[in-house]
Image (cartoon, rainbow, N blue to C red; front, side, top):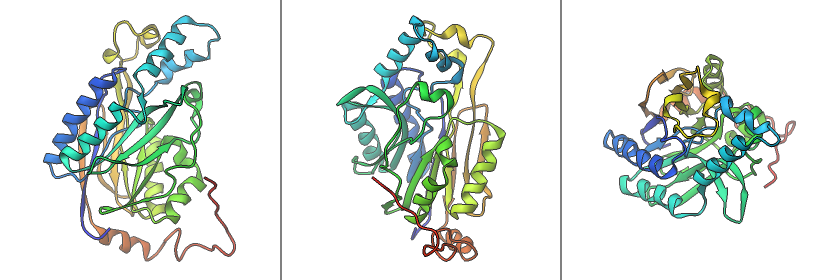
Length: 303
């Protein structure tokens, strides 16, 4: 980072299981963030078309439940193919507002369309897809939904704003995945998530202190009332009002909060990231620099 960067961490509810309507909601929120001066706008884990809550995704373990099959087919239908017209629409939104746009999506590869991936897409201000990361290991009930990702997106991306990179939810607990970002000099670390527990905040503090980077962590917000009435597994949501309460936050390289955490509502968090904060904290600890011993501990990335 050579200059201050204004970031926007978006906590918003998708138009659940409606990909195109969610993209247009994303366009409006990105316009709001850009109008507030944001240069980097980040949306939560699988914002498009929704995070598959454990309240209903657990039903996918049923061997022949027709409701579960229908729900998975619906999620697949509304997922984002890469490349596609909808993916290019995200690029158009980034270009229209002159921002870096990072979006969590349920992704489908058109060449192998039977598998859904949990992905982060990084669109540059010129509209190009600059980076593409698939979650390495789905967690718990997610293994009923998503395939395993590959090694793409495990190195920080050099941009005019600084080096940007990130991991998705609990793959942030994978030490070597984090170190791959550290070794490539990450300065703005994106930790998109669906974990709304109190303990996740301790994880964000640790990542900030270990990486000595700024951490931008958008979390999913989801209410039962927002599900369509004809959702095949809607009966499993009865008695629960909130499926994801949020917890989005932006942290400084010393683990202090610059914004958030935000719970129980939609909102956009903003912070102005000052480059000197990186160097102030890395004087004492630099995980991939003077606090690294590569002659004793070696790291290898196979992609």
